[in-house]
Length: 340
Ligand SMILES: Nc1nc2c(ncn2[C@@H]2O[C@H](COP(=O)(O)OP(=O)(O)OP(=O)(O)O)[C@@H](O)[C@H]2O)c(=O)[nH]1
Ligand SMILES: [Mg+2]
Image 1 (spheres, rainbow, N blue to C red):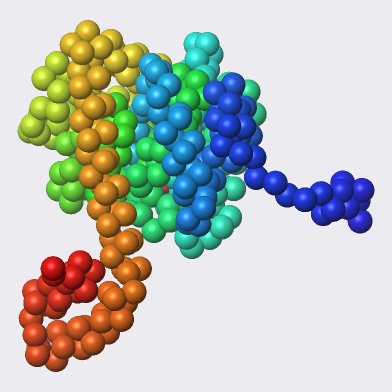
Image 2 (tube, protein in one colour; image 1 turned 135 degrees about the vertical axis):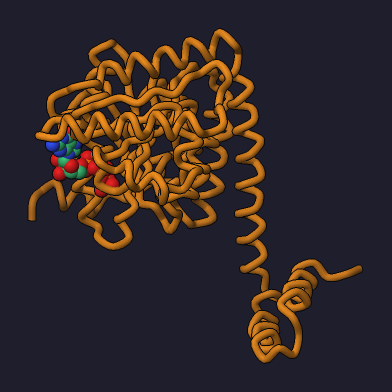
């Protein structure tokens, strides 16, 4: 047994108090930031209470961060792209937090490590904070907790926050309630899939980057670009002052990465000029209030003893068509909130 192990086993484990965590975060202590994110991810009620106290203090800090969502199908090249873009961002003198939501972590615990390894260069930089997060059952992994993690990263002073999510429909709609700009990554030759792609994903994209255009497929890439440009033109405008562009990129050769960053920077300049960013963030907070409220209500509802007690019998009555699902649901609500 090594002496360090003996020491850590004997030493009583104390959770730092809220003041210590908040001060740590505000002073840019990555360890405290990491611990706070662990607290918000925890399902234990005492952790939740503490996390909310920390959040209430952190959210008051005024920051001017850029929140960017990077979304795309599994394997589209999101993590590798973030590694390349992240380096460029840091080299411009900015600090960067990456919240990489790992959808596959439910199946294999190894994939989180995989993601971190993919962002190895970035992880080694002191200007970058990389936090892989388990998806905890949410589609694509984005949950209201992602927004809480964003708030903590902002309080820690990061200039740019990148959120990696897998494009599977519903999760984007949620990520759109927490970031300012969404970059959709698509593989070359995936234009055929445009029919099958949920409109939602394209609709919320502020720019599209076709990835991995470094091999022998410049022809395919050019066709894809034209297809995506056409598809974007068919969609309703997201911001009246913004025209969505399609970029050909490669994280391996660095092709197009700078163009994408310039595009993102132009977006923020345009949004700030029109004062759109502030209004949008207020709307996002409002929508999150109700997302979180729904979640809390659901949790309260399903853990209510009277609901638990009557659930089985009501389910049985519904399944045997003794009562309709509508009256069944109503009965359950009445178990939760008895009529006065
Ligand atoms: N040739 C080439 N390969 C790339 C490029 N970017 C990523 N890849 C490869 O594509 C594979 C998937 O890349 P990731 O960055 O892990 O993709 P991802 O979208 O983050 O994947 P998930 O998080 O699993 O959804 C890896 O084997 C990468 O090496 C690129 O620009 N060019
Ligand atoms: Mg990834």
